[in-house]
Image (tube, rainbow, N blue to C red; front, side, top):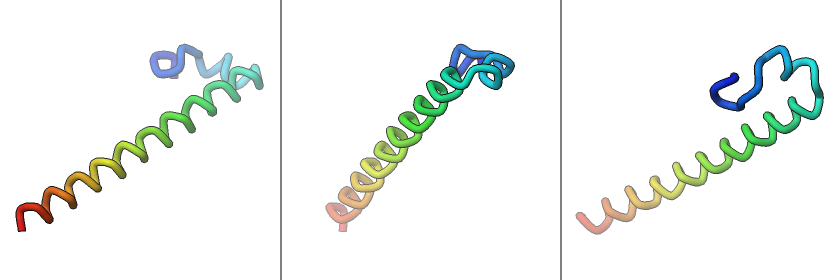
Length: 52
């Protein structure tokens, strides 16, 4: 957890504000990754249609 978010587990569990910051960052990263996957999926399907 420390390398990914700069916070140790003990501090994460002890401070609500730290926990909320980490969880918001996780959610933002998750949404960003899902968008990238969706864009790549569109590109793959688009390229497959061009080849047909």
